[in-house]
Image 1: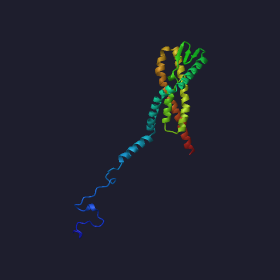
Image 2: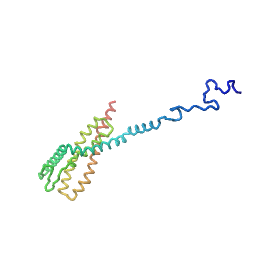
Image 3: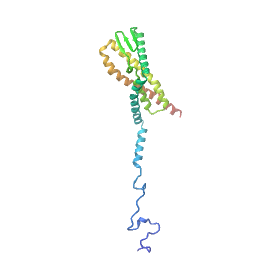
Image 4: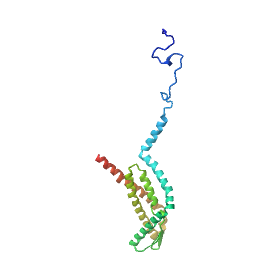
Length: 221
């Protein structure tokens, strides 16, 4: 039975429900997904999840730090060469003292170190500075406090330098007594051991400083 008002909608009836009358379009932001901003929210969530992952964040920070060290090192060599020269002469002096104490058959002339008839010239690549920069980049990229990073840099770099001194001393011994093996030891073996040394000092810092202090703090709570 038709109502007495004809085609007019009853009170409370939506306007678009009247037969033959088109429904009004949904406003932006209502159900239907028009301009909801979901892609942007998903992108932000993905970025946040990436950054909250310690491994991904380490890689994202380590590579720029390493690139900065790679590009910055030649600039330091060019504009602050006196610092590099000081490291070179200090390293040569330490090597001379080692062999002079051990055998007395050593001689020093600037950057040149003699052990018997075998002589080496200490250059900037022999100082371990670049290895220390790599280690510093790995420490700075690790997700921990700046205080722990500072401990890692100030304790780890001297360890790497000490190992580098031992490395050069070993090369000098090989060069004097097994000259045919010198190139292999210099170009391959000791380069690999430096990578192992950097990684070992970095892991030692994580275990002894970062994780140990975190465990101490958790126990105190």
